[in-house]
Length: 214
Image (tube, rainbow, N blue to C red; front, side):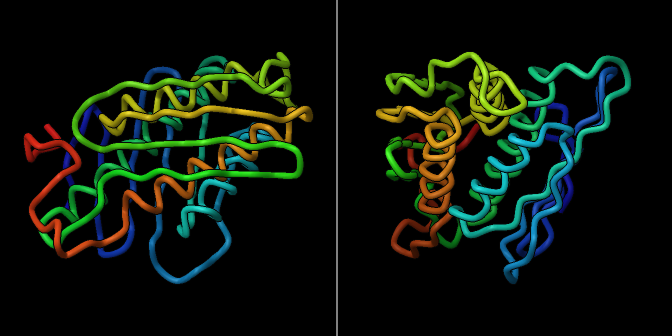
């Protein structure tokens, strides 16, 4: 099944969702693969961001592919936001695909890495909103590896918009910026895994009582 969703081309084929987003600035292609475990295909031009997307897939039990080819300027904020928009659309497409048979649609998880800890809650119910609370010392540093921490927040904002979902993320503790943000992506990946979990008792139902993701 192929459809246009929020200006993006979304294709669902079996256990795989592909999304293509083409703008004046760039060509973005992402995929979420629920099939057999494999290595992800990640080339966003930002090393740490690629690593975080790897974590999202690792803890979400999916393979995440993401490529970003800029046409004008390589702006890391735009890279993260655009990838977030496309991945959000892909994640929502799989939720929609599973509603008839029953799917959780909402998920909560804790993520840790060494001294760092984060909490995430995600709900797919047609409401685009995000909250990223950066209590941890490591989350307030301006840079993490080869990117800005603010650009990672832009990813979650884009994901919520593209997926028409609510994303809550609380970076509770952590000193090392790498550990702190990795704990966040681990929590986020596990929360998404819960969202996608099949539940026959919820057949035809969504997380919101209105019963639709529109």
